[in-house]
Length: 216
Image (cartoon, rainbow, N blue to C red; front, side, top):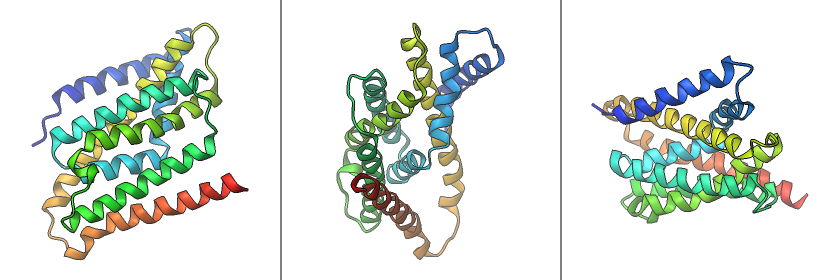
């Protein structure tokens, strides 16, 4: 049985903030960025696929927690730098880098199933931090497109980031909850490779599509 007491507390707090941000028209406009951040990650299949691959690669709860925390810290940093215009990076290379991160994790997942342990499996927090820097640039570009409210830039940035973290947490917990019965199910051995091949194929498709945008 998974013990997610601290995560449930954090999740409940984020839900309260989400309700507050959407229910009160006269509230601080910066808090309206909380549901926007949550929607951005939950409606972003590439970010979700990366988290899914990470959860499959690192099934141990403690190591997964460290990896997800490192990912969150890294993308919070580059999200802020990009949204505030400190690090102006064109969006197409960032989107291609996000797709590439999925391909790399899919390859690592398949290699680990074959008994070859790479960097992501041996040091998941380090790999998650490095990839988180890239994903944060994508979050920051999205927030930059939305724009920040004048005089409340800092609060809006924090609210958007909280929304991203809340959506990320909800998705990881959902994956963990669904994965437990699947691991116990008696499935044919060949099905074990399907997630890696499926994620790899989709990541390659996105990568090719986004590279074409860069050279067009």
